[in-house]
Amino acid sequence: MKPGSSALEVVGLTKRFDRLAVDGLDLTIHAGEFYALVGPNGAGKTTTLRMVAGLLRPDAGSVSIFGIDALQNPVAAKQVMAWVSDEPMIYDKLTPLEYLEFVAGLWGIAPTSSEPVAQELLGSLGLAPHRHERCEGFSKGMRQKVALAGALVHHPHLIILDEPLTGLDAVSARHVKGLLSERVRAGCTVIMTTHILEVAERMADRIGVIASGQLVAEGTLDELRRQNGHADTSLEDLFIALVTLPDAA
Ligand SMILES: Nc1ncnc2c1ncn2[C@@H]1O[C@H](COP(=O)(O)OP(=O)(O)OP(=O)(O)O)[C@@H](O)[C@H]1O
Image 1 (cartoon, protein in one colour):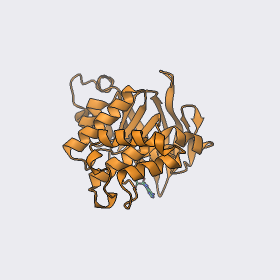
Image 2 (image 1 turned 90 degrees about the vertical axis):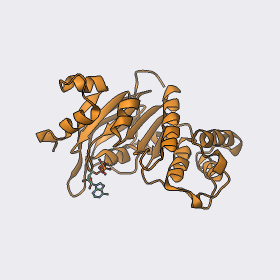
Image 3 (image 1 turned 45 degrees about the horizontal axis):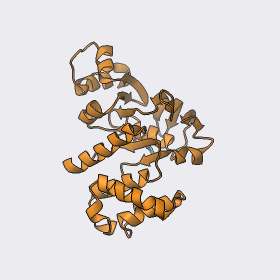
Image 4 (image 1 turned 120 degrees about the horizontal axis):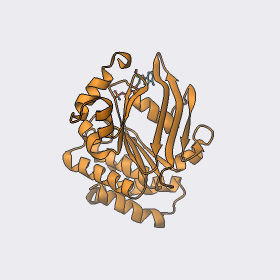
């Protein structure tokens, strides 16, 4: 992907349930960046990402993924992206290796090509010793990692993750963070929501703060600090200041 081009362009994205969940959101994520979307509970983060991933139809707005209109061409858009939910579904009766081969098959990738990729993914996530065990006996964290591996098997350029680190122990979190950083170094774009502000602070090139379905601030940590007039404050303090603004409450 061309450096400097946009991986994701969201314009005027809107979704109403009982009340407005996403309110005319504009968002641009550059190709090759690691972007963290943070915000309070109910801010509209998951709803935004579900619309981007093609799982929820927006009431208004547009979503463009590497120039592909994701609402008009959802299949083409899905071919270049991965979606990892915070409540992943995997097939319990399969082993991780079988699951990855199954998912690769859905993408039309032959087992001879997918197997080395699957082995490598499972190795990076610390799942190699369990690759031949059925997923039904796996912990929540292990299942999350199998789902992540499954989402990456077709070499997506844009990786969208909803709370990928929640519920993971320190070793598993390290594996996931390592894999995502390695993907960004290889040229992929990563967008993830997180409530772990330290992770956003350490890993993200840019951070978007969303409140009441709107982007209330965006930038590198230094830019966010400058915008708020605090040279050395933590992201946690900035976050609390931003999401408790009168018009963001
Ligand atoms: N399927 C749904 N039906 C009705 N309301 C919904 C649905 N999904 C989300 N909402 C509402 O939309 C708003 C935004 O929810 P969303 O899950 O996007 O927030 P979030 O920022 O991801 O929150 P959290 O950090 O708690 O996961 C909330 O008020 C939520 O109750």
